[in-house]
Image 1 (cartoon, one colour):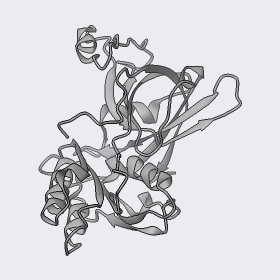
Image 2: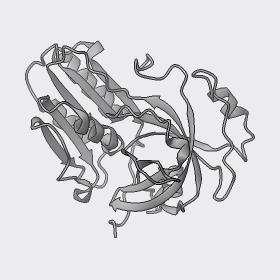
Image 3: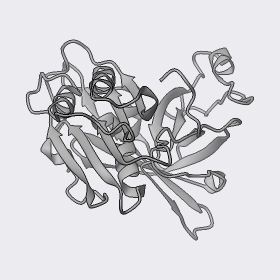
Image 4: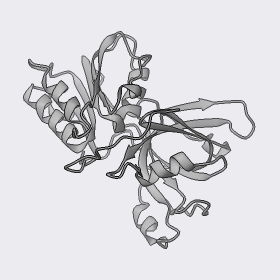
Length: 286
């Protein structure tokens, strides 16, 4: 999307926290739980509320953070010496809990996608960090607010994502009004990643798509499922499509051709898949 989301904070705040735990929850996901009094001011808005996630440059290193002025932080981030510069990626609040614990009054869950490279090894800097993270490891979150922002006159909602967008879609489905109607297409790498108990309004039809063939391009199966829905779209509907860039742009194009105005489609390509995705998968959760 070219424009900044309407719900993005004008002066986003940087929140410091520490790792409380890290556990494998399915074949493709590691859940890292963060806590600490530094999170108490995080104004969670639910839905797909996301943040810039900063982790130490190397295991055991101090967490050096950029100064934030308004929405500006990138140049200050680049100015940090490369050896000390933290890694930064975008993540969604998978869940947030306010507790009575003196040292962990607020807890945030972050679901990190796990993929293997061509050799079968864990790929991705945050993924490798997540599986090795130990309690007390420092992290930081730069609040970015939600992207999901349907107009008040919305009739139905249509959601589509691959596993990278699952935490956001899960949160949207959880927080939609009980009388909401619509559809949701969610693609995941394995059947172990399907969430049978996913909370959603009765009027939203949820379709899980298993990627299947190990060489399938991420998002391709979800896009095919979206395109298979024939017929025009109500121009007062609202769509949220995120994940691999071909899925996001392809679904947007399909919805536009079906009659949904561009202004009622929130889409974002989180990443671009390689021409030949890794042929191996990581082992299942144990």
